[in-house]
Image (cartoon, rainbow, N blue to C red; front, side, top):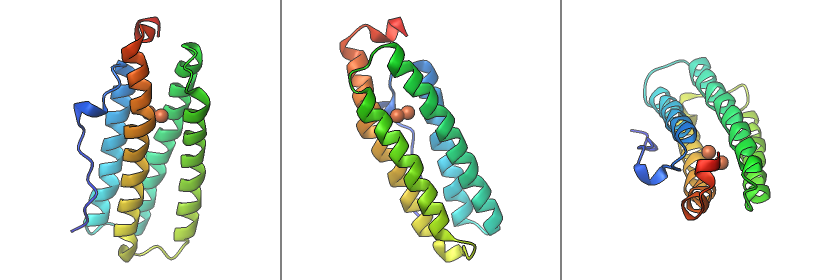
Length: 141
Ligand SMILES: [Fe+2]
Ligand SMILES: [Fe+2]
């Protein structure tokens, strides 16, 4: 049994409806990777799920960055740097899996993306949420 299923939790909420919807979608797409790694699916299906997850993450990061610029979020550079690093690192990780991806790679894939997603949401996205809670920036968004 592969662990790494991420459970949506209101503590992950930012209070910005569009971002919370996107974060829920990211959690769901991540859990689809976990499911694929736990079940007897093809390696190409696992790859496709990773590709979809990262495409969605890229789109979401872009939306979040536009919003942070608009409200002049003071943590913008740090947050965007983390987005960029996440995408670069995920690209390297996928490349490192190479063409010879096997079912035995499942636990590594799951633990990698679980950490990848939850660390950012509980540190950087939470800092954004705390900033919004302390200001009326959410209503300006
Ligand atoms: Fe973010
Ligand atoms: Fe986010």
